[in-house]
Figure 1 (spheres, rainbow over the protein chains, first blue to last red):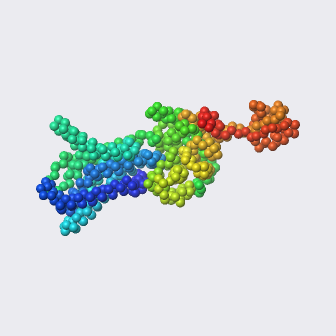
Figure 2: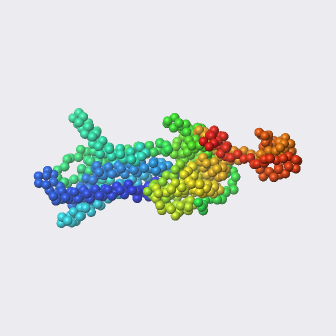
Figure 3: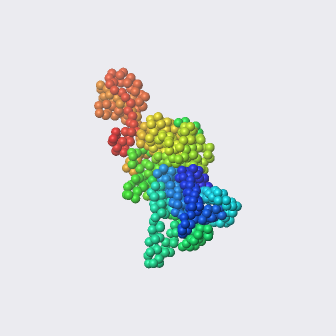
Amino acid sequence: MIATIRAEWRKNRFRPGFLVSSGLLGALTVFAYAVSWYQATHQVRGERFPTSVLTLYPDQLVNFVMGAGFPIGAAIAIVLGAIFTGSEYPWGTTKTMFTQGPGRLTTWAGRVVTFAGLTAILTLVLFVVGAACSIVVASFQGHTLTSWPAMIDVAKGFGAMWLVFTVNGAIGLALGVLIRHSAAALGIGLVYVLAVELLAVHFIDTINSGAYKWVGNLLPGQNAIALLQSFTSPAFGPSTAPVVSAEQSVIVLFAYFAGLVILAAGLLRLRDVT
Amino acid sequence: MRLTTPRLTKPNVTAMEHTPIVETHSLTKRYGSGVLAVNSIDMSVRRGEVYGFLGPNGAGKTTTLRMLVGLIRPTSGAATVVGRAPGDPRGLQKIGALIEAPGFYPYLSGRENLRVVADLASVPQKRVDEVLDMVELTSRAGRKFGTYSTGMKQRLGVAGALLKDPELLILDEPTNGLDPQGMAEMRKLIKEIGQGDRTVLLSSHLMGEVEQICDRVGVMSGGRLVTQSTVEELLGEKGVVVKTDSNDRAAEILVRLYGSAAVIHENGHLHLKTDPGNSLEINRQLTASGVGVSELRPFERSLEEVFFQLTGEKQGS
């Protein structure tokens, strides 16, 4: 499998879709810090939940960047996943890859591992750009630069964000394999993450006075939101309690990841490459 | 194109040459839509030969080749390729394939695309430059694949197929989209590759190409393998067409010289089964016997004529 990972890394490290996704995520992080900083320093009298400049300092880095995870980060990950697998079909590269030696499942496993590596890089971009922004804000505000989150919190935050990106990316990967085209796959993925799941949850909550709310709590988006919401602090003001515990959401998200990867593997293994 | 490093030494093992490297038994593919693309074919490609796989568009050639490399599963029947089942990773390591259009990443350079393939096939990276040199793409290897002309894409596809220095090279319509010069270069390249102990399975619908390059051919039509033999067998015996002012007298003389089985009366002329190189002698004998020769020309069927006869296609349609 090392050979397939090496090949996947070589072909994807400079892939325009990956470079654009990384750049977009970095730019959105800068934008989020800029807007929040402006709001924090230009408070409107009587605002219910004013943005505190305290949330922008380095010690709040983990909690602040969690806001990028859903739905924006998830949408970017879905797009990346869909083009990662979907574009292989119109380019005819699936047949090239499947006739080189490693079996289909080995090739797929290498692709998934590489994709998980790329989402780790996306997460790293988010954290590094966030850290740089927090340093800029703290410097201008005359705040200390020596106070940072504990390493364990950074690791937890990094892991949570990576999981959210990877699971949503896996939705894109599976759709790309299923539809065998990137444009349709990413379109369906985006519609799902930005609209369908939200509407479904709203609908499920209204049935029988919320008797089936637990069904909605099993959906990937709800678990991603719950996991990201578990990273907060008083500096962010009052927050709603997550509908699912962080531990449960981690398990559910991993289950989705495994299920989607196995589903796509089955399709790849059984279907003809025409 | 220049071929610098293919294995050009013919092994001195005659028995091995006749061992099939590709063998199919009642290989059949029926698609879900009910279309019978390949209908129970029994095909045998011998080790070391250049095998031409002929057939009109839609005859089932590409479907068969896809089954041989494991991209498509047969509906029924069996196949063995380099001693393994189609798609077996151990078999694929010995096969280089260019099936239909070359599939590469448009945003990567030609060289980087081959490096990806080399990584996947566990081939040393230095082999990339060797195959680029073989297909004379070295100077343009740094350009993105998406900017390549059709001819360059085809050449990169062949380079990719040669990366593993394969025992079996499967080329599906490698001259598609090439200009006449590109076709001639590709033909030369395939011919040179085929001189070694490597087996080449060449799918094409260009008769001249196959006739010049291949040792044996298989002809597909309507999903069936309608014939499989050497090019010579397929073309039949060569001969000489003779027309004289007295065909009966000429026939007597020629029967005496070549035997009765060699002389056939056909539509006002004689068809003599002999090497066209004997034409001068034939003319001399007939003239010496007082027979006036009005026409003396070699008779040779082209592969194209045989192909149209076998497939029932209309020439020039």
